[in-house]
Length: 98
Image 1: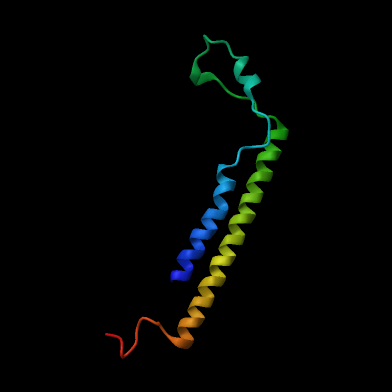
Image 2: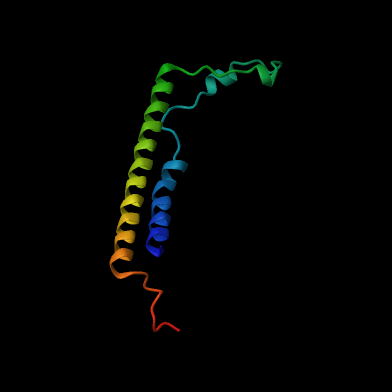
């Protein structure tokens, strides 16, 4: 179990830069600045171009692939831990353990 927790910590530290990283796409400030100041903030809609949508979908696919890879690694670690427990048992449970 200790190995699983440690691996999840390392995997979360690995994925953290992906979650914090800024988009490489330019900001859509031109669409926001074109709106008049008298316009209601509820009615403001930002136009998203097809390129931005494609870039967003690409980023989502990359993140999904990263998450799938992490899930595979966690599953492998669980399998290894289960196999170890089946072979040698729980190291904390011993007849001579106080």
